[in-house]
Each structure stands twice: as structure tokens, then as C-alpha cells.
Length: 96
Image 1 (cartoon, rainbow, N blue to C red):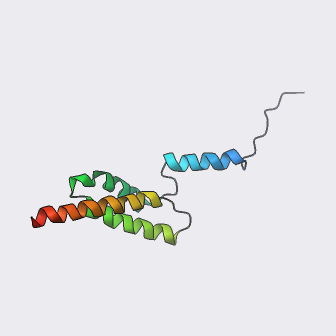
Image 2 (tube, rainbow, N blue to C red):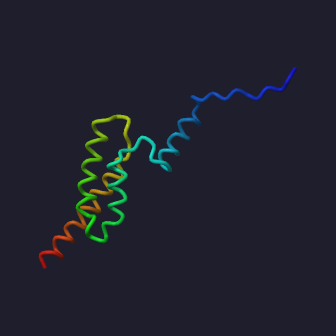
Image 3 (cartoon, helix red, strand yellow):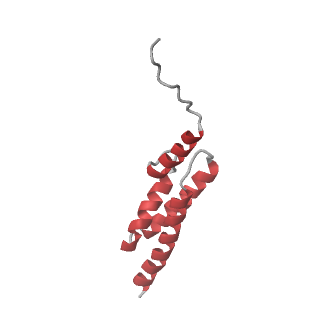
């Protein structure tokens, strides 16, 4: 009799944990708007991308709420927060 490798059940508990880990590391099933909002939020300290981070954050939240399979709410909220802070700063710099 030959030695057979063990059969691995793909629906195990470790599978769901690895899916969550993959979602953290890779943009799998994430809203493109949320990804853009996150990166624009990071560089919004330059002031020019701040309004775009705000816009893409709101678009990302709308897409996530309309599609149950999409993720990325944290990135969208981060984009909104950073976009709002630095948009206000941008307006202050322009008006001053």
C-alpha cells in the first residue's frame, strides 16, 4: 500500500483565518475607492490631494454599503478623516 498524503479540508477554521489575513495584506474584495482614499489620505499632508481623499472616502463608503462583498471601510474612513483635516488646512492657507 502506498503512503497517501492527508486530505486537507478547505473549509476548516484555519481557512477562514487565512482569508482574513489575506484581506489585511492584499486588496482582495476591497473597494477601489477605499484603496484610493487610503493612499490619498496618507499623502494629504501635501494639502493638494486632501479634497480628493475626502471625495474618494465617501465614494468608497457608498460602494461598500451597496455591495456586501466589498471591504475597506477603515481605509475609507481614514481617507475621510485625513481629507477633512487637511482640506480645512488647505482652505485656511488659501484664504490667509
